[in-house]
Length: 152
Image (cartoon, rainbow, N blue to C red; front, side, top):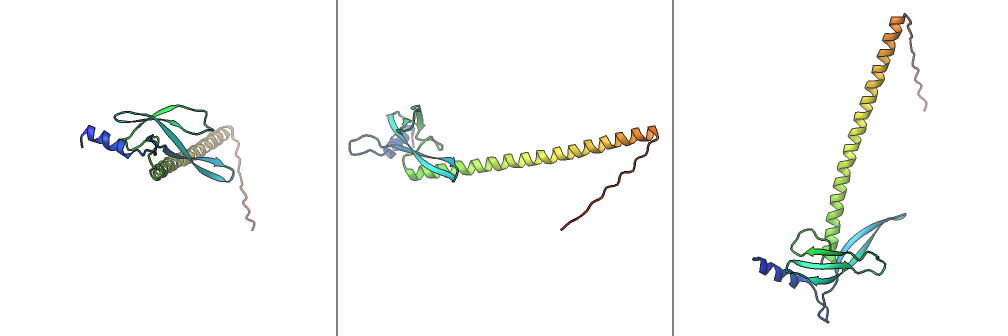
């Protein structure tokens, strides 16, 4: 398919209402609440079209951010989508990727804690060895007893 055919195809995918205007585009998001996450749907109004995409603005009454976004209709990842189904598929893919990144970060942090614990034990052992060496030089011998009790 040539670039010109792609442009025609992408614009043909955009829905029009009975007045001939383009319909809204969609994006799902979520917010954290005390009861858990809440998924919401954002609507984006199409302001104008270009050969490769559309310019959109968030179409929500509660939204004070009226920033314009360019959406390349040929791109795999986009700000918003023509259908609610494709917007939901994008949301799921984004959240799966986010979980993957967070799990990787958690693994890295857990490994860092393990290394720090090993380092702490090495320092304690080193400090104990230095203290014992100093005592030996001074002729002082200290015997430490550790008592461990188990209760059930």
